[in-house]
Length: 455
Image (tube, rainbow, N blue to C red; front, top):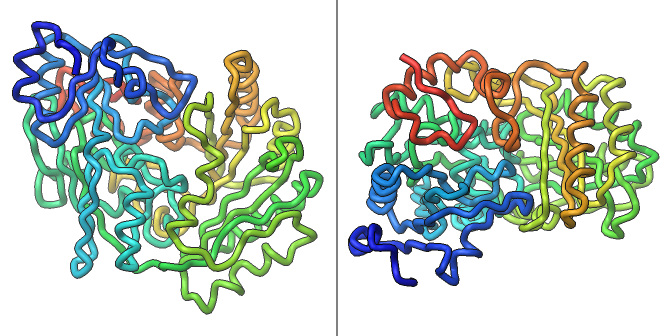
């Protein structure tokens, strides 16, 4: 650690973690988030070792009038895990997973990544819904929803929460659960980072794997219309055991455009082959990587498509139906995609995650339908304008097909204000504002899709 500014020196003596300032050699690497398009320079990064460190860091920021950003995995595309000139509460040193096989539960620290959760839980043949990319952080994904391969069978990641330890804006450390601060427990399940810093999570686990049936099958782009219609047919009749995603992407040669279906079947092993047969038997695929696969490997299968440091700008829309006209629009937009790193993904929402009332948790997107995600991704700063323009144009082109509501975790940094609040929180916004007023009346935690406090 470099010499600290005098005002921070006394604080550091009682801080278990590390305080990083711009003069520190480790500061530059620590300030970067997953999205290379985000380049902010915090005044100080507080790398915390526990809840007491988090509480002290919150107090330090408030005493010095510094804006607070909270970093779990740093994977969210919006870059809200960092801040210009403020204080970053960095939970990355807090990575542990303690599994209780008898209780089928896991205690997970706030800086943990989903790949680490899968590794520990799968050692006991257990898992919970958590992401489709293993490098995603547990905290951000869970607080904003939690799409994952087990979503149709076991609900969103937040639907499997048993409790959350929170550090509040006044520095208090509390637990939120069904029988303890239940209003806060309702709010953090979908309200993002608006209510405090989540230092640890307790998840309900389910018997899964260690092998499931899943993977990817891809066809030439000129078959996109037929493949997406097949995907729609299979998705609309899929049971709770099956999660299905369609994708328009570019092949490993970075030239050839493809259309693909990704499946994850979490039912009985003996039923897996029959469940994916209609996908594998369709037409003449150019790639077939679908079959028995370890669950942890399935959760890491897409990691290479989202490299750290790539420049990202995302937009998403939710459609109750995937009409022929919507399919044509999606195909047309991808045909003009400027970067081989970009994709359009279509995620099916159905099953257990959609059988929960929109007001039962703060997370309100409970309708069955298709979530269309425009992943604009590129490498060179010179492509920034083209990358953002393509995503925005595709988002606009889908306007006539969409239903109310959007998935919070796919909001980018320009998704702000009243339209963003309505799309993210829907009928739950007023209640969220009242709870925010009780737990964070001064809106200390506002570097998010911000819920303004209101009495």
